[in-house]
Image (cartoon, rainbow, N blue to C red):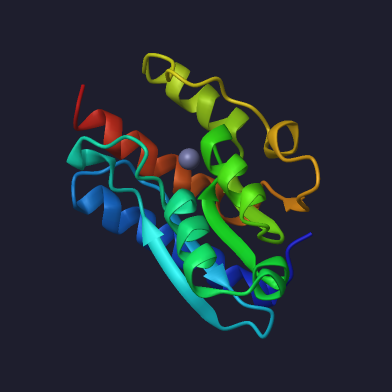
Amino acid sequence: MVSDAELPYLRRCVELATQALDAGDEPFGSVLVGADGAVLAEDHNRVASGDRTRHPEFELARWSAAHLSPEQRAAATVYTSGEHCPMCAAAHAWVGLGRIVYVASSEQLTSWLTELGVPPPPVRTLPINEVAPGVAVTGPVPELTEEVRTLHRRYYRTRA
Ligand SMILES: [Zn+2]
């Protein structure tokens, strides 16, 4: 369950995903929030540079390892527009971050991209808990799912 107090973080993720799209990148955005509700860091996808590991969830995991104590990381939440991929789920678990809340699931994204005729990614799509069984995960969040879907449609339409 997502509380009303959490929706603004998810809306910010969608905003960041929109910024990524406007910058010619894939529309993904993520926000790292501390135990007190303060936004600690945020990022969006930066794979257009050619480095396809530049996912925001991966960047936030590394940022948290550099800037937060293990206790702060465990108490933090990562909000994200799309469910972590296996690489990001692994990084999240390795640095000991807390809960994850995502708008759209990997399963949803896969079905949208298949509909759009996008070739499958080189890494298998797995639910976060298949990769990181100890992480508390909430999602999808139906209030915002359609907005995220629209961003992905826009991204691939401009490339068709
Ligand atoms: Zn990822």
